[in-house]
Image (cartoon, rainbow, N blue to C red; front, side, top):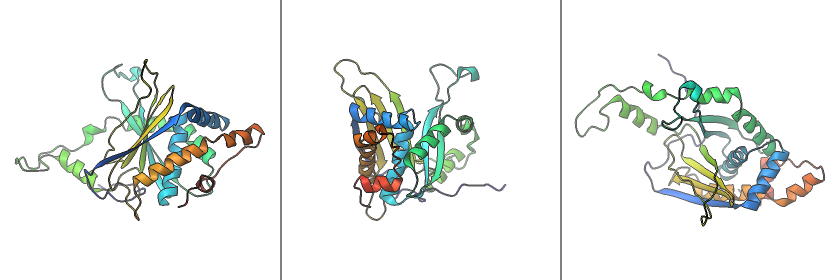
Length: 273
């Protein structure tokens, strides 16, 4: 039977080295910076931080690597007791993939607002639910049960085939949300290793003291012209700092709606790429 596959998103090739050294960059936004980002978002009808964080990551990919066809992934829980799901056990986390074509004249807040609206839409919810329960469809026939075989069953063959292909998404932003802090604890950090389907993951968690963002990747994940994810992570931190600047609030307090384009952010944040 014929199969239909989507065109590969950027970077369009597998990571340079599988099982390479795990790397990370920790970005910490203090409570004032986090509050400023939230306030700017609400003025532009983006009522939560997640769409801002994910759209800013897309901007940083465009600035750092010139990537224009980007697929970004959002894990979300579809646990629902009305569907027979248990309250506590089981894994009911699905993935929402959003594909976008990037141009320098794109309006940051319009993009962020559109993404926020899509995340809450029935279309997105159906997409997330339909991705659950797919493990049962992986072929598991017997191939070669020899002790030295790397593909004893169809399960291993399927996974090795997937790993040889380019990742299905360019980036993932995984957000645990907000958590309080017990006495004597100043912060919380969330970390996880990227999957073969997503070369880089931004792990976010908020606390009363601000926002922790841990960018995790494997060495060589984006390797291109001497640049790698460390460059992206630095640009990402700069973009978030620019979006939180109090100068934007002054403009909006005067009823001047400031809508920076992606190119504006690159220029005014002082990023030369």
